[in-house]
Length: 305
Ligand SMILES: Cc1cc2nc3c(=O)[nH]c(=O)nc-3n(C[C@H](O)[C@H](O)[C@H](O)COP(=O)(O)OP(=O)(O)OC[C@H]3O[C@@H](n4cnc5c(N)ncnc54)[C@H](O)[C@@H]3O)c2cc1C
Image 1: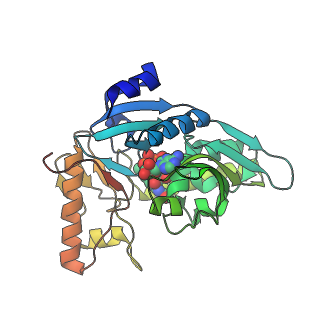
Image 2: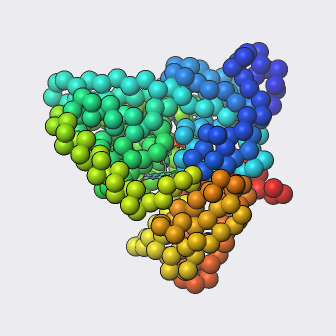
């Protein structure tokens, strides 16, 4: 990577060796060799265009709620998406709410509630940015991004700016056309359909969802569900049935409350997470002949960490 080229373009925005654990929900992850943050969507688009034009490897980071980054970090430019503008169009037959892709999705849900707009209550409990949700079809409590998305504005490496509908995204369970073909496009903004509703009922539903989550999922730093649910079963059920609740590697433990959540006690390393993932995967394979696949993205170098 040509550091001088990066310096000449990004000037004082460019930082070096920035620890990424502070930006991930598991609180682990080594340094980004280079780091820039983008605080609006046009700036994000310009930054990405520059990196593509110069073939510079980069990783676009949202809230780090679905990634495990190695302790050695990322030998790339990490672009931290902090483009967070929300625009509400509450009137007319089809109210919508539009957000830049670095907006925390839960903040979009709360803003909808402020305007007595219903339909996004489920998103109030899902960690992560709008970009991460649109990319991975985040969902909870029987709803998902696919059912709310009207259109996403994206920048495509070869095709430039595109406006993609929910159908265009070819969504599947926790997957999209963008996720199946990574590195080709970034989401800049997303517009969500909502409906006029009653503010108190909206807030009551959000509280209920929050309460349900607190009852069934552990608090504390984690990457959320570590493994995808295999067809017809639940990863958490299999891990629990394998007797792995409470299993520990270093500072990370299989949660006694929900076995698909691995909790950092404050001392964990990314390597601890990685090793616990292998241990759980191997044990479940041995006991039940089911090969679990990670839901989280595992990034970086794991050779000799
Ligand atoms: C405690 C906990 C609970 C969770 N519960 C749920 C749940 O109920 N339902 C659910 O679906 N998920 C859940 N998750 C997972 C997580 O919330 C989602 O995957 C979320 O959408 C990730 O968003 P993010 O901004 O953190 O993405 P990141 O982890 O930062 O990035 C994930 C991927 O998305 C890509 N990406 C991010 N932004 C963009 C963009 N603008 N354009 C293109 N690509 C982009 C990144 O490059 C990366 O490949 C949970 C996670 C945690 C920690």
